Every structure is written in structure tokens, then in C-alpha cells.
Length: 353
Image (tube, rainbow, N blue to C red):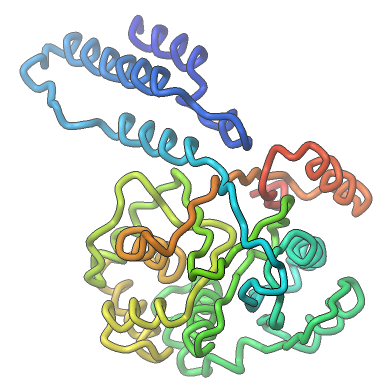
């Protein structure tokens, strides 16, 4: 009880223990706070072991709490890039991709507007992939202002009914979520050499960013999020070299197709959709659960480890908000967040999530 009380006091004194304060741009935890917070965790662990009479069992290996604290510190100490290519016309062009659904429509046009407003690369074209291409086309052309080539696809343009049936049989209610992830990967893999920026339909960018530079470097985001089940799938697929302090599962990722193809070929000896569907189904049979990540996490890990000279890290300053009841409220929230300039992006979720 005493150790718990002390830990609560220290957690209140040192925000790194709970995190959100340092999500803001320009707010960073100090090294002193990290060391004091780690000391508090170890003190609590020692007290608990002493109460249980387990002094001899105290280990020098870091506890789960210590690793999580270091993950937060690593993520929150990233600073903003201080440069961009001088001439906008000379910057590399990129493709924009949204995987979307009817349920996303209240946020989608804001997501489109936010990216077109703040993107500092020329846009080659925009691709939307959804269950119903015609429905999405009608919505986008009514609500969004787009002046570049726009292409609309349906999920069925990429995944056969037999492949979807395999996912339903293996993953049950997660099949639709898995299909969306695999279709996205398959589309990017088939995109020749066109760099493709994928943004979640519920996420709105708030600040100007150049995502790809003339020298081939790209923006890359990571956060302190962790999902052991995702890691289990990657290990099952032979991907073992993961950074213990970083997760690259974010709401937006720029993919360079040739690098993603090389990654898929190394993991699965092929990069066609049939191979990927089979790999996911085999993983579920071996592991017994359906949650996997075959896109952001392995791509980010490989970029950070093997292509560090092609990476520009930026602080993952994303906040979550519930979707307000009225569209006017939503527009007002976005205007306020942009004017504040404290965050790079905002993601909206249904209140019950």
C-alpha cells in the first residue's frame, strides 16, 4: 500500500509516467525525469518484493513498466525536421491513398482537405479504395475540392471472392479489416515506383509537411504503442529484428513501393496477393488469433534499421477526439486545433470506441 501511494505521487510529479502532456509539439521530457521515474518504478518493485519475501528474486532485467517508460521517452523526445527542399516545383511528387468506407464519410472530406492543404509535395494523383467505388466517387466529388487526377476502385477490383472466403474462414469477423490491409499493401506493391502516402480516413493533418525529399529521404513516424500479437505474427513470418522502443503503426505512412516489395519478398519469397492471404491464414492457424500488421510496422522497422540514411524522423504528435454530434462542431474543432498549432494531426473516433 505504501509503495503504491508513493508511486502515485511520483507519477503525478512526472508526466512521463502517463504520457499525453508530451504529445504536444515543443514539449519534451527531460533525461532527469526519465531517470527519476525509472528509479520510482524500481523502488516500487523492490518494496513489493520485500513484502513478499522475494529479495533474492529481484532481477536486473528491466520490467515491463520500465520498457514502456523508455518507449514513451524515446517517442516524445523526437524533434521536428528543421529543413525542406527550397523549390516546391522541384520536390518529388507522390500519390495519395485512402482506404475508406461509408462509415468514414463524416471525416473523410476533412482528411482529404487537411492533406491537400498541408502537403508540401506535388500530388501525382489520388486513389480511393472502398467496398463501393461509385458510392465513394459520388461522395468525394460532392464534398471535397480536388484538382488532380482521382481514381476510384472497389475492393473487388483487387481481391477475389475466393481469397476473401479464405480470410472469413480463418479470421471470422476480422476478415474485412484484414482484407482492407492486404488490399492496401497489394495496391502499393503494384504501384511501380510511385511513392504512396496512405492516410487513415479518420485522421486529419493540421500542419505543413514535406513527406519526400529530393535526396530520397522520407518522413517516418513512430510511437510508443505496442501490440504483442502483431509482433507474434511478424516473428512467425521470420521477421525478428524489431526495435524494442518503437512502433511504426501510425495513422499515416509514406511507402516507397520498391522497398516494400523487397521486404515482402524477404518475408514470404513473393509479394503477390495470393501469397499474402495464405501467409495470414497460416499465421492464424499457428497462433490462434487474428490480429496482425503486415504494412506499417515491418516497413517502418526495416526503414529505420536498414535505410536510416533515407529516413527523416518527425514527432508523432497525434491526438484523439470523439466525433462531435454536428458537422459545425467538427469544423470548429479543426479550426481551433490548427490555430493552436500544438499537434501534427488529429484522429476522430466514434464516442463508444
